[in-house]
Image (cartoon, rainbow, N blue to C red; front, side, top):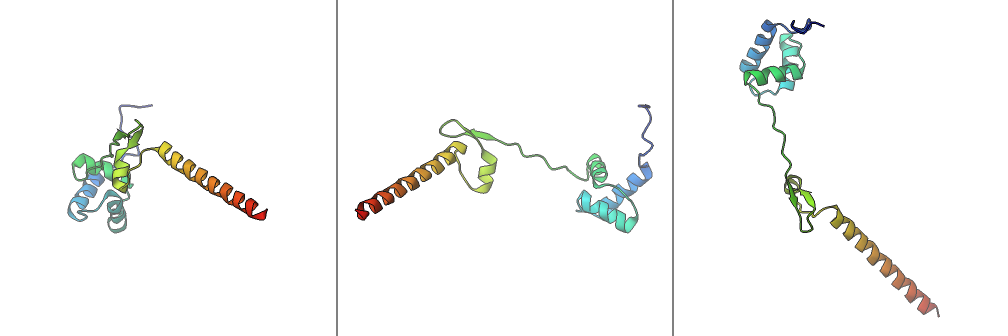
Length: 126
């Protein structure tokens, strides 16, 4: 394996500079995916969108999206809650246990009502 030599599959510098120049001048405001499609359709330059994205980031034309940093907060019981998700959704939830508790209490209430109804039916049957 030759580590000091460039890849045989490397795209030449002329193609790279032409593609970046076209994106800077002709396809301003296009993202790498759409720009690579237009370069292929209109200019005959076949590049993957990832290759073009990498080149545009290196040239300072495109800025990669920053990943959101998830912030965890603690609820009343000390459970970690993913703050950003609930802020975006406009919800406030205090964790999985709270949801489980509310479902369980609803089930118990329903069971209690069913038992009451059965008792009433049995009483009226006498």
